Image (cartoon, rainbow, N blue to C red; front, side, top):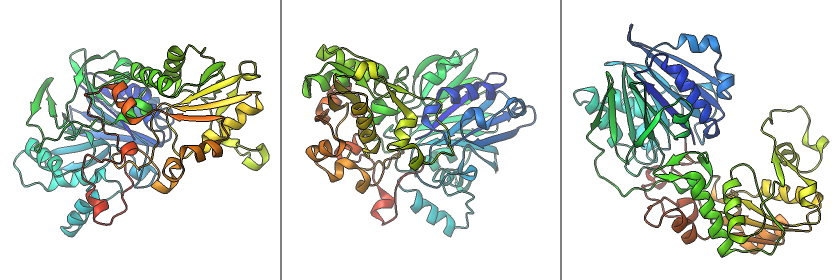
Length: 460
């Protein structure tokens, strides 16, 4: 899962992209990069660094990124390997001008395309699937940049929201299914495009609309043109896990308020999996809205029983020196005055491996909770995601290997309850057509590389 942002038609565009990436930091923490296009010289300038946005950039590096067109990327690798080499945006010298590319998603036929391109003589500089797109554009036999980009994108399977600069022209596109989000905004004569609306808010851009599945747009000289959409239209399948976990609660995606969707999940969870308890607490921060919804529906008071430490970094202390559940204790602290002697409902957004949840239960017991009832505002995660979310292999997913009763026993809770798949989808929107492959095992886009025997675990 990654975050992308673009600004065009605004002086010092890179500084606004920097702020947009700052708002999208939750989507990737491994590396950050920005390409700026200096329209006076026609050249593009790239700066990228590892770590958080604030670590990757300083005042000097931002001052070098001059121009009114800029794209940025935050990396959270799901394959291809970490490190600066695989950080984005990519920047190459292209026949029609400097070409920059930022990609969020995962191509499910990347290896098939890479093998073909290598056989034709292509030289790859990274191990990420995103570079395939660059080679397809450069090698297209179509006439004109618009047609070459269309040719390249039409060959892709899987998930992609992409931002592409060719000279001072900006292109943006989503895959046919619309797995990953991409929103369009307007600011002072220019445009802002980003993964979430929170990236528009921080730079004072007015939200216009979401790019549609399969849509390709071009922005040149302040004019936005909708290009022919990608062929072979598919039913929209936006990723439900964006609403469950990834997106910021103050964002709007596909016409939905993320906060309101999560509250609806929590209310439906309270209906389906009630608990007799004294208070409701959330696993902060991603489950806050769902826990509020559970409390609203159940009438059980919501309390701040866990505090998250937002400043966790590396430490030289070894886990053996710090005691059991070290990583959990670094991240969360229980509020004893809230928990002691209480029957507690703990609401979390999802349960993947279960290791963090087990440590949290231990913390709550030590803080004096007499009962711990665990509630999940999504169904059991039983399947890997191949469309750009870092889901573990099936063998690492606790719900793929264990029944709810076995998970309840492993976590050491008094009861365990999941939101049903039907309840989740109906709470979001019965007509939403969401991709729920990680819950249901039904994959909307073909898994080409997997079917050909390649290891397909995601990329960006």
